[in-house]
Length: 124
Image 1 (cartoon, rainbow, N blue to C red):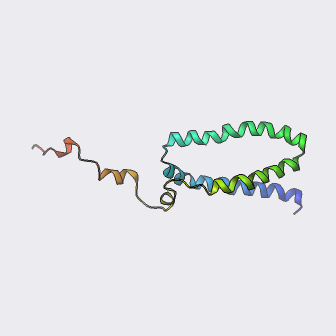
Image 2 (tube, rainbow, N blue to C red):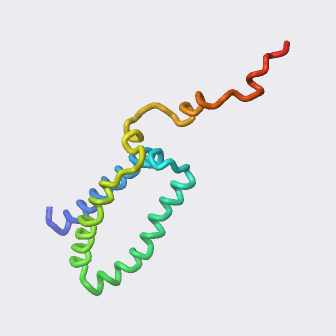
Image 3 (cartoon, helix red, strand yellow):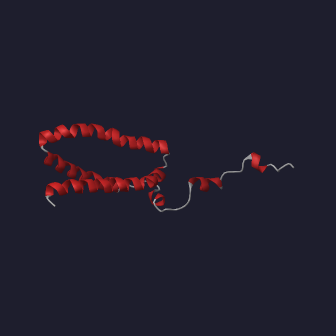
């Protein structure tokens, strides 16, 4: 396969692997950070909000500097930015990824005292 045809195929394959892995890790990330669905959704919205100005500015930048230069800058950015982020430790990350069947509700239910209604004897 010629290089002109292989490059987009490889780029889409890498993006697919990234987003597929990201999506698969979202439940563990949510559990490790302790956020609820709304907070996680708001944080994920930040991806699009941050991407929009970049997408709007990269086209003119590529026209001015050349597409190969911008592609090289992207690779350099990925090599510099991704390793530190991927090595970041979240509190509880290992326990969130351990596939344990404990649910937060189950672990807190045994420590909460019974409600007054449940401690009254049944009349009958």
